[in-house]
Image (cartoon, rainbow, N blue to C red; front, side, top):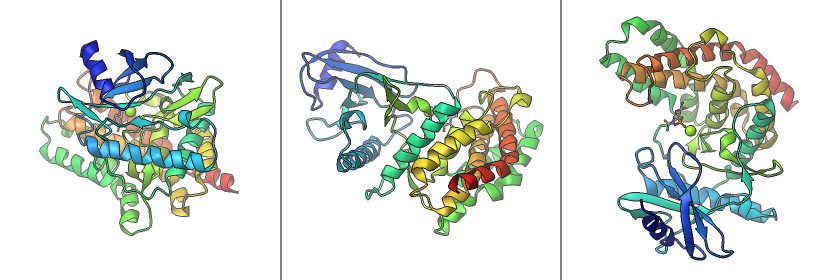
Length: 362
Ligand code: GN1
Ligand code: MG
């Protein structure tokens, strides 16, 4: 893309002011991001190329995002919140009213740039508390959204679907990798009944789906320079799911003492200090809307996500590594054994998790 192309794309949106320059911004792994600098004192913008290999339905994607950001904005306005433009993302439509622009067969979108922000990464009990509080608040604000949202990645966190994919991978055993790793298949099978309970409860009408973020981590929060939370970002995976998605997937990565592809399985522990800090923050903002069945199943959620990731990594290993990028031939096998170990360590903590939640709710 030349500078001229990028400026042309930016001008297709209803932005204020004249574009002076479009320059690279950040280092996202999925979408490519630029900053649109305007001349004079008009606001700046963020221009993003949408990765349609992962998010093929751009109409659904942008429709979800606009519904969610508008609903949150309405809540902030009703509460008389100050500085609303810093507390929720604002997407800018094109001159034809659509929230994306197609150029050279690529899909682009624009949002307002929020100046003077700080991003964080890494895991501490303090940051985990903030992540819990912030994403609990995000779910709380969206708990009464009247609009229907679509699944931007269909069946993304549906464990029955993931087990079905694994079943097919086992039946095909394309690479002949099953025999030597059968212990993993057995560990998965032995838990299949108990791990699919969320989907059963949903079918029985006992467990709701709500609007979840589905990529809960501190990197997806913008802070101001005084370390106050401004807003949640990276809304592509915002979709209907069980609240377990935001709760469990955060802990899957944050509470593991090792990276998810570490082969040092004996060093893997489930960090209860992270669980406690995160859960405390989460319950502070989410307990007002959570139903008892959701709260009761939070420890289950903490085991469901290592389990689901185990199923996904192992299926990909059996299929010949077609989904997750690998650096060496056994990479997905190592990831699988890592997640299996994390699952076992998390299972051992369930009584302590239950006691902690009970204590929190008094
Ligand atoms: C993928 O691309 P990344 O790392 O943000 C995957 C997640 C998995 C994660 C495991 C769209 O996320 O669901 O938990 O890898 N995202 C997709 O590392 O499949
Ligand atoms: Mg991600």
